[in-house]
Length: 213
View 1 (spheres, helix red, strand yellow):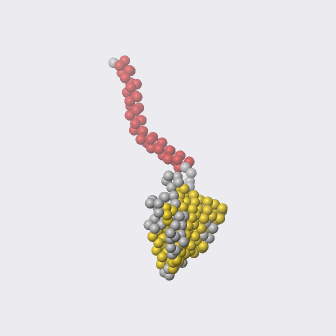
View 2 (view 1 turned 90 degrees about the vertical axis):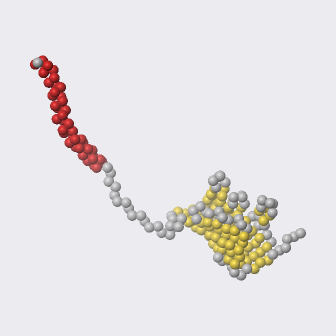
View 3 (view 1 turned 60 degrees about the vertical axis):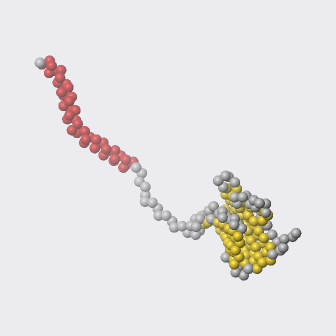
């Protein structure tokens, strides 16, 4: 019996030691976690409070001189091109103010319209442009799908509001329009190139030239 007891005693001791250690195991794990948290706290860089955002004012955040800006459609075709002697971007309104602008724009049919003025104010993607001072918008002569020719159209005014995508031109001020050999003046105007509709308001005068046989 003494021999059997001698053989089992080590296992009894190991089991008893393990049971005793398991009592303290949760305490040991908590201590390790506490040490890990302390280490992270000591080694994590402290960031200061976020600096207050500066209010956006109507002041240019960048300038461009002697520049040109091009935009393209989804197929990579040239949609519009804007030239200017100087450009100023205003972040509060996200507009570009351009000195001596010259704008070339192509519609979905590839027809060209050009515009010039002393100053232009354009939105971010140049789809809406206000032409100010000696503004001139020119649409080249075109032909429709039936081959009917549409004469060259020139619109002049002190303020022309151009909507590139919808091909509309508006003006709250007096304008002069030349369509082929015909000439019109009005106090204000709305022109829809897609629908081929022109609305002249106020004091309207016109000179129509008969078609030559």
